[in-house]
Length: 565
Image 1: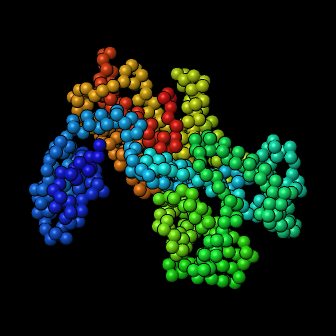
Image 2: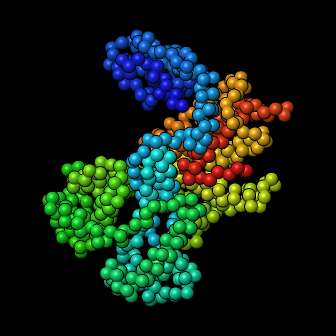
Image 3: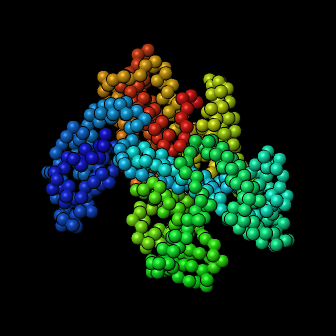
């Protein structure tokens, strides 16, 4: 039920054109005594050369009441709307019970394709804390667009190219052990890489050897290429274990190496269109007229760069998927890089250049001294997830109402969800310091709180022993403030999903779920669903609606639901 749109529909067309009224103009007042929704109009006073009273009367004169709006009033420069609680409540309950966990889904993106590049790990290395935000934000965006009817393509543009692989293969040839490689996988590769870097400090010739080795990899020389491919296979298998824990899958794993022989055509076209310039032997595109500096396309030694490979990758994706939008999820430090390569594609006349979007985020870190990692100072993602799961296990083990199997399931779902939610709880551009104790607070603004609220709904429904099959409820059972506040919070969820897609901001859904959970717990403390052995259909219907929406929202965020906690 789009309440905002129904309010807008009450205005005459002349008023809609004069005031350019849209859903974005309708907001929620600070408290319910001022109305359920409001519309500011003081910004039009100067334009219309009228007083607040005159403009307010002009709006009311052209406002036609319908079933949804019960009354209006004007306070200052605001027009306030008071809703018909019965109409809104019963209409929304009916809609949610009908759509269940598809309440906020739509066909908005029908016949449209969106590519989402995220995670993009460097293979043969550990996934660390720096990969968390891109991975979970990207997955959320993919889920949200899919829920709105888009065909989504999840792309893991893995780092499988460059001199570091020459170092790893060289290290394996010098000190590697086949049995250890098969047994320890990435651990053995990383140990060798660390040893190479240490040895190279005293023996710079090793770096030359590594560069020669990588050249052989590029040329697919069998003596080194087979080792390189083995490293890639082991690394992908290892990273997939992390993705399995996070319930994340990808449609494409094409990495940088795939575009090794696909860049020259782009470079040639830049040359033909006089966009390429020489700069001390290197090839550049001068973007200073657009305040974007210089985009380096080819080094003086002839090797390619990220920009060159991104240009080729974007062209390849458009040819494969004919995307209507292509989204790149990376940290804010790459903002200039994406602005540059988007502009180069625009200068090349690519029609899809205007449909490219860089979604960037702030830093995600740990408090000093928390969650020790097995390797180095940078916390490994697997260690963070294991730590959170184990911490949750200690909490749920105290619950005697759960079986051993249920405790294990809850610990995994809640522990992983807490880590994921920490990266998408606030605006993505904000820096986040991950506090495990705060993240696992079952009474705070956390995913365990939302998961627990949904599990509470399941428990109530089980105790009632029935589910609402059709809507023949007694409205008087839910004709109170706490019920209507929950109804309005659930109604907003549809807007939250659309806004999350428009702004590439999963936290809008996160905040909506927190608000719904708070409203539900307040509602449940004031309204008995089962009293003297009798079940209130109306109140049970609201519980079911809450359960469906919390499940829908958690799923979009990539967080498991659990029926018992």
